[in-house]
Structure formats: C-alpha cells, structure tokens
Length: 136
Image (cartoon, rainbow, N blue to C red):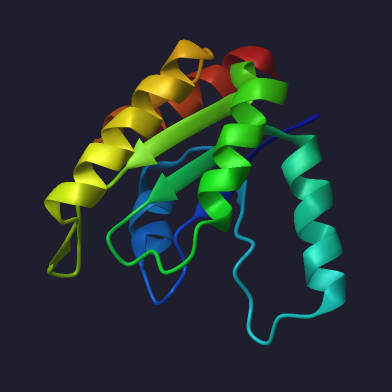
C-alpha cells in the first residue's frame, strides 16, 4: 500500500474531486482522464488495489452504477480502507426521493460492513488525512 487516496465515484461532469482535494493533506489519485484508454483502466485498477484509502463519492450527477458496484465490492473485500462520501447536491442537482431511499439503504449496508460514511467534505477529508498520516 501507499499513502494515497483513490478518488472513485461520480464522473459525468461533476467537479466534486476539484473541491475535495483542497481539504486533503495527503497524496491522491484521480482516475478521471480524457480520453479514456485501456492503459488508464489498468492504472485505475492498480491504484484502487494499492491506495491506502478508496473513497467513493456519489453525487446527483451520477449517470451509471459502476461506482456503486465498486463501493459494495470494496465494502466486502477491504472495508477498513473504504470510505463512502454521499454528496446530496452537485451544481444545483439533487437526488429525488426514490434515490435518497436507495442511497440510505446503501449507506446502511456498507456501514454494516465496516465502511466509514460521510456527508461532509471536511469531515471526510479529516478522517482520510488522519488515517493515512497515522499509517505512514
């Protein structure tokens, strides 16, 4: 492992990563690149495996569910290094009631597996900063 956080989660034009990294005092990996290549995919898999923390941030801009699958997978395989950040608003977009209910169930599921869950950027970043700093 390395002293780095993997920034997984919503893409689709969301700028949550740019806002979040301002709170980090540790190294990070952003898997979002353009254009996306097979080499980028392989690097993402390697970083997800080797980073100290895998953060999955979900926002109302999410268009697919792959990040949800990664979060659940890591909540089973490596809950001690998995963090879930639920962002309720993204550039004026909000989750509807049905999505909120599903995301609350997801939160409960991954928490039961031992995953740390946050809804605040600073609290989440503070946890990550402390966890990585204490380990390295």
